Length: 347
Length: 241
Image (cartoon, helix red, strand yellow):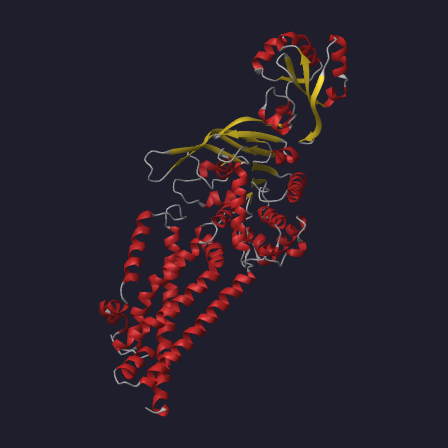
């Protein structure tokens, strides 16, 4: 639904001779139709530039953006101003913002009607659609209120209703929950999830909160310094040895109790979760296993368990038991070992 | 001078002042509003970025604004004659008043429009709006309370300028105060004009403030704008965590 190839954005600071900031460095992103895709990263990682390049609020320096089969970068033209075709394409992409960006001089209903005014819809049609959308986001009774009279969560609901006014297939969410408290964040995320399911809306969101990815994303990408360093569906990520994103999504704590110990993270998904592997391991190899930390959680709608265990002896002494765990279809990460080394060890 | 002698003089002067200030305010708003918006749009990073045009407009505005009004009036005489056919009287005074007020108002408009949150502009762009939509639906309505306050300031400044219009025989309250009060030592009449000016200015200021404030309240600006700014600052810091 959204594909970017080699997306690059370089900012040239005015008057500072030759100083350039590379916000995006060849980003390839692929968002499938109907999924919720989260891009996570620290501030300055380039998330904001990325989402603004998707509807060309920012002109990429290089690379292409395709949304719903339409190459937006081809529509951009040369000048800084957006041509008619690009503006039409934008009207089919909804966008919600961290600070809501509602017009304070307009009522809630008039705010939702704004995109419809731009599309040239008639007054009757506008108010019908606006009320319908306000009902959808649960704010039917606030139609005549002004934004300043609403709470943050309500403002974001208006923002979402407004973003949906043009019947978009794609919704871009720019840190939509970052200005909200945890409780409100949950309800807004739930709303986005519901809209994604009900309307088949493809959602691309950027966030710096791991919880957002954890609670609603089907797929995720980790951004660092303008590059996507990891990406995939949540279950793919969890199954990737040494995935930073996976361990951030699903952290288990615990430190090794001594030098001559091997610490192993065991991730259970689906079938594997039902087998008594730890006691089998203990019995088969006659070793004492201590559990440093464990958790079971739902990540992206999947039941996932993760356990950090400690085996006596160094890694070299534990190649066989670790191999056994792998044979059980579990995902094993040995702390302090490169994933490449691990594979060799398994052989 | 008795009251019966003063009354018709003052009445005529009040009308002259209102006439001159009214028309010149209207022209200043019509001319200054687009100019002020253009100053914002053509600035670096603006929607119609054009650094050269911005510099030229800005320079013209600066020069015109810093010109003493009495000199502007004299300098514009041939232009005034071309527009109104005469260089004396009320109509002739309106031309330099309006031309002096356009850049004054334009700068105030520029400041007011710059205050509008850039996020709103971005939001309208993301909906597929063009620059004209941004101006019409965002920049003007969102800065309306400030624009009204700017208009009030312009009216008050124009009342001040209009005192000098007496030098081209345009009449008005300031003219009465100088000709009768100062040159003929009619102290009473002078104080009376001063009092009338004070009352008129207070009324205009009050009406302007009231209009701006009621718009603010409708939009619920009261207290919300600074709060939003605080919120932004705090989330910006939390983002880095």
